[in-house]
Every structure is written in structure tokens, then in C-alpha cells.
Image 1: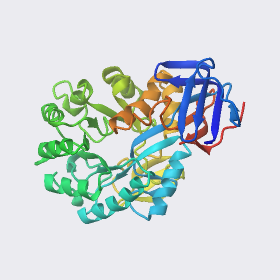
Image 2: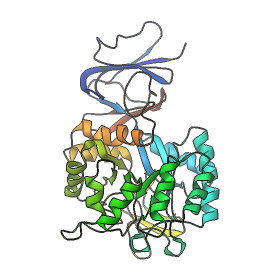
Image 3: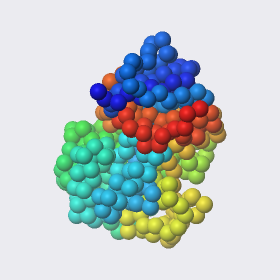
Length: 389
């Protein structure tokens, strides 16, 4: 018999809304019931029951865009280093994670894709996101300018092939030569084309969306600001129902008003909170490398040593959740969508993850009354065991 865990007494966020005094039952690696006690009767036999009165239970978080954590980088180091970074983020509620690379030599990226693909094959990662090298030198952010290149479809295809079926997303400056053809290639292969690190105009961004781009890489950051005569990519990405916008809700990358603007125009069904985390997430201040570039992290803010550009974040998704509710005042259900359901749908994994429904993976997060993380379950096993109320 598979082990059974019954969580009782919590406020449980389901696709249909929040249930007070709810119950979630996990049997083995799967959820078998969730809802009011009457709709989820406790099973007989040997079960582990956890009283979570005064807590919230929400689906496990899904991070589309993450470069590392716990002192480990997904862009360099060994498989064990990558696994350490994954574990760090799991302890902060991210039960599903896509590993992001940064701009590098093509041969280096191909080799890296092979290593990350093996971890995806094992089920440790949900896939690979290539951020660079096909981005604009005008909006390079924390990417090495001398390694940037135009998005040649043949080279894009080379990265897809190197990922052995585990390429999930490629960020492109779609206005560059070969950009639209590369977007079409990605769409044909079922890989998300994301508009980012771009200097595109409004019209060029519309063309990219029409060609098949469906994600805005960290909206507002590394792209032209919204202007009243030159609305740029931000307006095009917010207004199109086909696009999901990534947001980094760490209080550094976005002013709260910008976050509210995105939610207002895109709606809660088209926002995905991401970390864009680098090595220092869950680790601490100090000097790090992001690809070939040196980064200084001070007071939790990562910036390039040379030039001072923001270099990813030290964010974890539990902090993004807490800030969204307590600082930004967003409804809990909208935050759950942005952290779980929406990214799961983008990855094509919403039949398995992203919500607390029978048959799906038993991936969930327990939060206290102040929305601080107290427990994490992944596939039915506790990563962080909550203390009973």
C-alpha cells in the first residue's frame, strides 16, 4: 500500500476557489482528494494526518526562469552542483523548475544543454530555457556582449537538438536578422519563443507574436520603456491575449505600480511570477559568476561588478508569493495562478501539476497566516515538514 497523508484544517486553494477548513489527501505520489471534509473523507487504515489549522495549502510553485541557487549555478559546474541548486529552490516551494542558461559560446551551450537534459530526463528538471545568445546588444543586461549573435535559425535548431527533447523556451530579440524565422522554427518544434532582451518597436513585437512568440521574458526589464508616442514591446506584449508575461516580484526589478499595471492589463491568467535567480538565491551576499561575468551581491541585490547592471535576482518564489499578497495586495487566488497554474500550462504540464486536483502530482506548499512558508511536499514526500498547529 502506498503511504497516505491527510492534511486537515487549512485554507486550501483549489481551481474553483478557496475552501476554509479544507482537506487534501495524498496517496503515494498523487493527490486523491481535495476540498471540504465532506467531499474528501479520511481514508481508513494507516495514514499520516497533519493538522494545519491556521495555515494555507497551495499548489507547488513552478519557476520558468531560474539560473541557480544555494551557491550553485545552472550555467556551470557539475550535475551535483545543479542538483544542489534545485534542492535549494525546492526548500522554498519550487517543486517544478526550468533551468536557464546565459549567453556563452555555442559549443559551451551545447555541452551544457546535454548535462541539463540528463537531469530533465531523470525528472529533476522540467526542461531548459536558453536566455541568450540571440539577444540585443542594446539590452544585453548581464550578458557578455562579445558573445551575442543574431538568431540564426540553424543555430537555434542546434540548441534545440542538444537538449534532446527538453528545450522548453528560448529568449530572443526578435527584431534582429533571423528573429522571426527563429520564432517560427521554435513554434514548429513546440518550444516557447520568448521576447526579451530586446530593442524592438511595437510593430516589430506584434510581428513576433503573430509569428508565434508567446512569452515576455521578465516584462519591463531589458526592453524599451513604454512611451506615449513609441509604445514599444511592453504595450504589444500586455495587450495580446496570446502572450504570458514573466514578472520578477522582488521589490528591485519592478515598482509595485508596474506590477499592478501588468496584472490589470494582462489579467491573472496571463502572468507568471519567476525568480530569474542566480547562485546567491538562498545563499547570501558576496562575489559570484554569472556565465563569464562577475557579480557582486549586496543586501540581496545582484549587480555586475563592471557597469552595475542588475544581474538576475536572489529571489525565491515563496518570497515572491508573500510579497504579492502582503505588499502588493493581490488576491491569493491570483498569486497561486501566477506561481503555479499559469506556468504549468505554458510548459504543457497542467495535466500533472499546477493545481490541487485528484490525479495530479502531490506537489504543494504550506504557508502560515502571514504567508511565510512552513512546509513543502513534492510528489508525496515532505521536502520541508510542517509543524502541526
